[in-house]
Image (cartoon, rainbow, N blue to C red):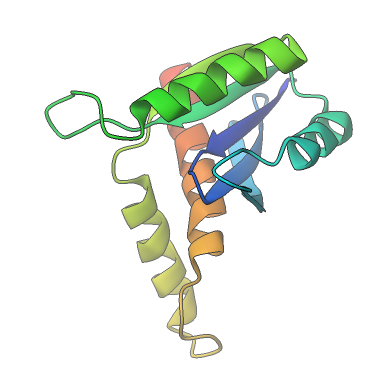
Length: 142
């Protein structure tokens, strides 16, 4: 079994999910808040110490036609920084529509009436879980 951490990187918030290649499952973990558009490296280091992942997956934003989005370069820089700081393999997974799917899942859960508003930090960590689920499916971990 290998532990994999996935990131849905953003300039304001980064959603985090943790997965298990044995079961092919992913669980939303937390949402880290960026400071001055810089990742929360202390928070990321704590996650690495706690989970000791063997691989990292980062959602890569692209436009519908496959071209780079305005955030693509920042995400590539984040991937390079993760690889450099933690000496770990970093894989990229298309993140198109993951936030939309995460919002949809949250709204379905909320139909029970307990909470009405969908918070962005919740969407981010669920989007990270979807990114990880998609990556594991493509790589035959499920």
